[in-house]
Image (cartoon, rainbow, N blue to C red; front, top):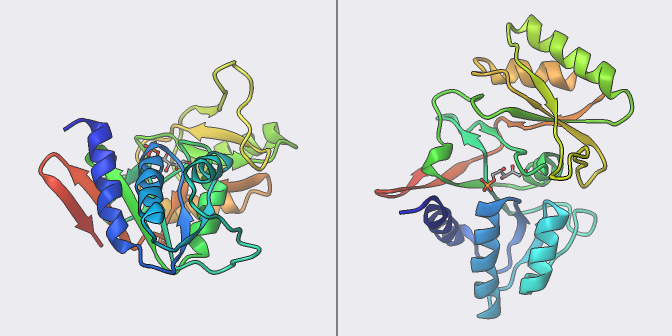
Length: 230
Ligand code: 5RP
């Protein structure tokens, strides 16, 4: 089965968690997009849900496909968020932000009673960190913030190149919130919680892509079938 086919299978299995009348957080990325397409089919057949998109990109796809949307201002509490991940470990701790939407994704997941992660098997890891950790930083003072991130990482015996993300034209990538993303290649992160706390202590860090204690369930599609991790 191709990786794309596995993403579709995970997205299809996650639809089982969606009930009529739910307020849904809707993730970002290629796996989440497969979920949106399947969700839109169900909506066209009469399923009634309202969604909060985690990015402008997801909002556009939902609008094109007829998935009704709201905002966290109108609907501050959600029943369920369904989103992809760049990595997930056995504790359902995640690295997210490969698509640059980590801030809105975390806000939406935090506002949800439940978060279900959808992924193909390549995303499951023993230890987080082979995927560079995306860290969203304020444009103001970015040089100082990067130095502070390096120093915080060093205190935790983590090191590795920090790269400001660029878009295809070689310009700085800007998030939906107008911030920069630093991709931190620290390698294996032995204590994700300590790194999370250290990054949150830096004023220029807006948010980071470690999602700890947010996911309740992972729907992982493998060659052998779909596996549910709780
Ligand atoms: C976007 C994300 C995505 O969920 C993550 O990058 C996974 O994307 P994909 O499903 O395309 O592999 O965190 O910010």
